[in-house]
Image 1 (cartoon, rainbow, N blue to C red):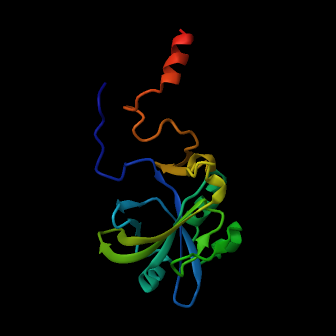
Image 2: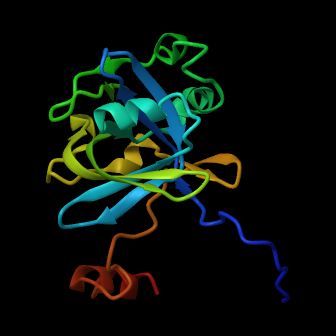
Image 3: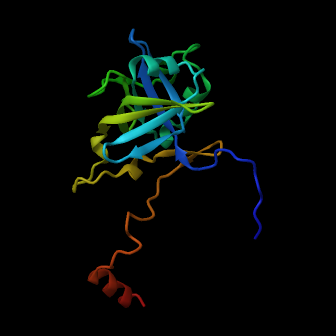
Length: 199
């Protein structure tokens, strides 16, 4: 099997399709879709979002140094796409999508109430990399929907049917294949007995 050589580019897929919410000093709120986002450090907990300087929300991030990363679901896919192709300069995305701004717990930027997870962020540094500027941020708080917690206190994000982005397409991630460490985890005695019975 051969390999085809492509020119350098962004090809680490899939990535989360998130809605970033922010506001300016006057309290004007906006939403935009971002795929260039993720975790950068565990301790202290840090995340990032990379934004083009010409984006309408860019000045809001610079002014307030706060934003919220709102994880999205398959049910939100149309709204996620709309917030990525329309500019806050031209439309009120909250009104057009029907998404609801809510109050965050640790920052002034709004959360998206329909999002199952809201990651509240405080900017610590801006790296002007080229086409995008990376906003590195401390995670100040995380809000999660209580309905996604099971009786043992485990967060079951797969039940929210999370949304991802892969090379121009929105994709669902609704099925969990395994949990961390499952490849080396010893099978329980009960499981081994059941496997023997079924042989």
